[in-house]
Figure 1 (cartoon, rainbow, N blue to C red):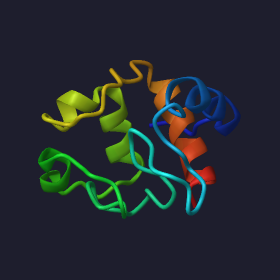
Figure 2 (tube, rainbow, N blue to C red):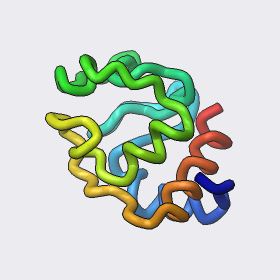
Figure 3 (tube, helix red, strand yellow):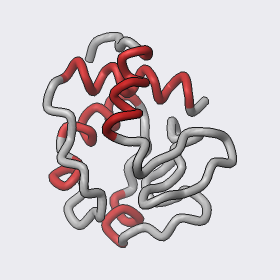
Figure 4 (cartoon, rainbow, N blue to C red):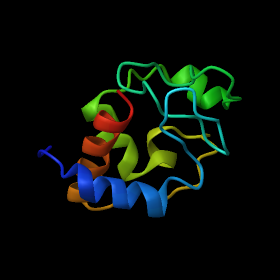
Length: 106
């Protein structure tokens, strides 16, 4: 992993993630859960969101490395997830989105 560019990560999030996720504290769940406080949270545990059993049972503790691995190919990382996004194939894009999430979701 490399340090990411949170400005570019914000752009990537807006164009590829925001249609399904929010990041604000107390923000609404959409098709996907609100991501505020994701760092350190366990998969399948955001309040008020209906997760698949795959997400609830995976037991991932979200941190930079697990998000980096997950964002490459969510369906491979958590088979059975309902997340439709195919992933960020470029490591730089994953690093940038993670830098943004660390800042926006703290």
